Amino acid sequence: MISLQSVCAAVPGLTEDDLRRWLEHDWVRPERQAGEPAFAEIDVARIRLIRELYMDFEVNEPSVPLVLSLLDQLYATRRQLRLVLETLDPPARRTVAETLAPVIPLDSES
Amino acid sequence: MAGTPYEILGVKKDATAAQIKSAYLKLAKKHHPDLNPGDKRAEERFKSISAAHDLLSDLEKRARYDRGEIDATGQERAPDRKFYRGYAEGAQGGRYRGGGQGGADSAAFQDIFADLFRNGGPLGGQGGPQGAGAFAGGRMRSADQRYQLTVSFIEAALGAARRLTLPDGRTLDVTIPAGLENGQVLRLRGQGEAGVNGQPAGDALIEVDILPHSFFRRDGDDIHLDLPVTAGEAALGAKIAVPTLTGPVNMSIPRHSDTGRQLRLRGRGIPARGGRPAGDLYVTLKIVLGTPDAAFEEALKAFYERHTIDPRKHLVETS
Image 1 (tube, rainbow over the protein chains, first blue to last red):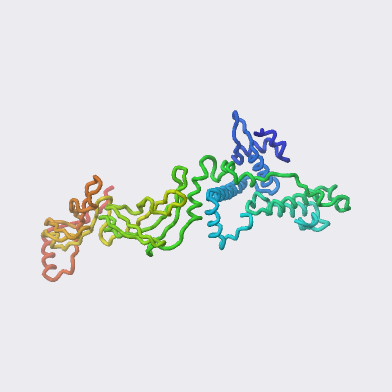
Image 2 (cartoon, rainbow over the protein chains, first blue to last red; image 1 turned 180 degrees about the horizontal axis):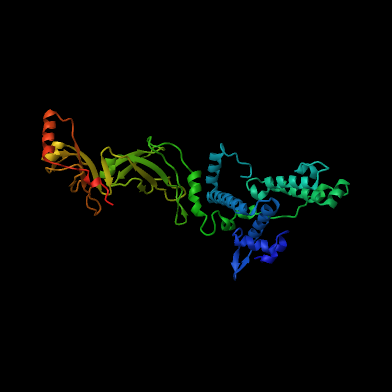
């Protein structure tokens, strides 16, 4: 688990005040250990993304939650799809792939 | 992405720092891997764009590159970065599911299943399967099949048996219980999608629409009916045949009845079932005058000369 200070050291251009504000806004939701935020790698990657959206791409503060909400929904959908496909056994997966082939051309990896 | 840093960013060799930044931001927004989770090549493109920007935004490096002292490929080793998308699709990504904290991803599953595994084909011209997935106790059950069935008012009130022909050619016998409510869903266990690999079969869910009746109305277990009567039947009393759910029944209209008088036929509503007593049929009289002849007009004139009646006196507001 990574401390708030370490996260700020690892992400260029991020101050502790920024990060605390983002926590207050619920943009980042790390686990808590003894009341202190304990960041995992996914949180750090998310913080990098928010930093880019907010500081580089000039997504303004009121719009950040909107963008995050859309991204969260996008990733939730992709997680679910992945889980669905992983739940299928290989013959069933092939059947799905063959059934979908006319509408969704799958590349060789899938 | 091949090419010089200038080509990658699409700027001229003499571009200003502002032009370079603007070109970089435009491309970076478009190709950011976390904003393009489905595009495997986005990461490579983004790294090239970032590397080109790193080089051209640093005046010293840009000058050395322009003088040929360093080459672009040497600088293209952008620090190995773990993007958000690499985590967000894993189980840990569930922490950032849409709509705030808490809950499990499986809750949203039904939506996606309903969309993804929808079966086509109409059913008997009145509705069709809508396909829905369901999880029972953590174990995957085959999909439930949804059907819509339209029944008449009388069928819903008294109960009926209907046979449905499904799109796959199977037939399904549906028992419509007496007193069925509009929008009620009948569940036929094990009649949905067939079970595969030892999974239990899904259920058939039949959502029932009840057509309105031309003169009966339903209020819970009671039935209401507006019954037209002649002025003579209302004034003098009569024994008349009243339609009920199960056929006509003779009913006495007391003499001196008026429009709006409500009479009750006990037990002639929804039949008794499962410990619930039968409902009643409420008949509301509605006087229909017809076309009076001269004699009737004379009789009416004579009557109203003898009696002053103001049926509208209760319409005056008292304040």
